[in-house]
Length: 347
Image (tube, rainbow, N blue to C red; front, side, top):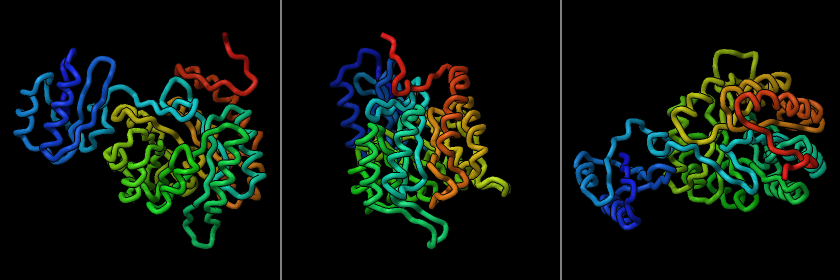
């Protein structure tokens, strides 16, 4: 249910509507746009509530929401959500590039990669301290030590950090170090974990599950949003299909679909989406052309020696080439790349 306030309605009118919603055992989430203020009513509503709310001062109309996901829907918020992380704005005019190693291995590896991706134009550093693996015998991350290495790289480069959190128990620890909390594909429907990150004030990137529909993906985002955390971005990282040549099938069509259905920013991950380094650049370009707000790219100083996902990681040279190739595509969709260190800034 969506409560649309009249133009010129007062703060007292808004407070009165929110109070009535709370009295009814529901939650009201305010979205203040340029032209109107709306309240998304979340919870098990009933038909009589519509009549009650429509007669309150300042209310223009009450509209039933047709989508099962409420807070992530454009019915509730028409304007695109923009998430500010330091000086970086996700969902704005600039394409945001998140880059770094799949897994934190050593201090030298992370520092070298962080400095290089920043020089090439990346805005956010990625790296896994806690790594989920299909096999228990594969590298599963350095844990807290990995978080400390990432924090050192942030101090050296100024790049904000994104890293994955695997369990509700680890949310507090990871949130102390990370600027953005990542929920991986395997945890997309770990609802206890989603509730927990929703209680933080940290931005959250929610990856699409391996076999998840778009509606299931948006409903998972709803868990985070319903806890009061509005800083949610979605990441298309490929889904499981019958094809075996690639690791996953990067669903490029999901990008414009989600942009139509939801106001949340969409990031594309062509590294996990393909599993092959030589497919990362063409799929990254396609994702930008389709409307992605950002890219998540795995980069490693020596992919052949990587402890995790070396086959899909770009070398330093390959990443620099990707950033060069992005420029004309980004421009063609009326976006721009962030200024690189040393670029002249117009005065």
